[in-house]
Image 1: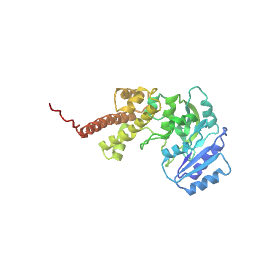
Image 2: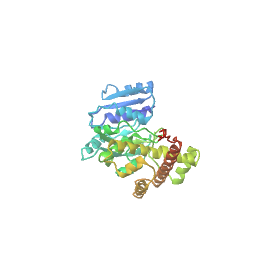
Image 3: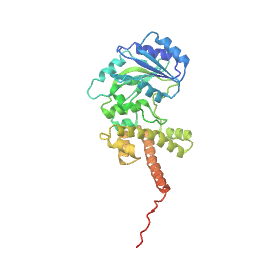
Image 4: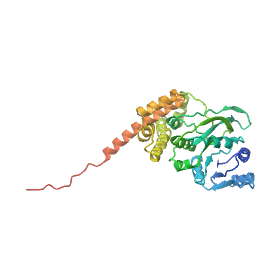
Length: 326
């Protein structure tokens, strides 16, 4: 569980729901992201004498992505399964039992359930819709929500260290990609928890937006069209490039053509084919397909310009060999 300035009442609900799990054989590592004596004292009070909880008080604030990375480094290498927890949800008592049992199926590396989308007052706006997709679609559009996931302990060999992040990097996205690259990542229909939405969520349950709205919002934030495209190229498409490059290093022989294409260059026929295909299968919103297509095209153009400039800046080779005389 990664913790940063939690709401005390929501944190208590989450901790109690973990304690009440029917699957009770576990250790819960809690990482406080940055010096926070009040949160540390609150956690000790809420946990009491339950020795299954281990608190890590980290002095530096690194953000949720790197906080989850260092917490996973605390996990014993012999651990059979790992679950990720937010600080403000509510787990149903059978959650771990349901998800851990699904790991017994052949070739399953990780498994996700569904969530009831809840407000702090207890009301609901519906249920999550996570889908089982192929690897290229998962790279393009994350379906692996960390708080809904349990994965095999041996997957840590691939997962750690995390890829160098961009501003749009998510730990659960990378873990899900590693799982699907090794085997299966089923999405169970069972609702296993409340996913509590509030003003301080790192990322809430995504709401549909029109392409025009996304473009307008990105342009306003990025300071114009050119900077917006640069942001999409370096941050959004760049995150997919970094994940693909790591997959290639993990097992170059088994890498798919899409992974190779994404890792090595920008937009080409392979990437375009998978972007369009994922959008047609509704595994990728049209707005995101267009955004990533723009980023991949810009990546290719930018790389071409950079390579060309680099070749021009190289000094001409000199031939210092003296001519012989007869």
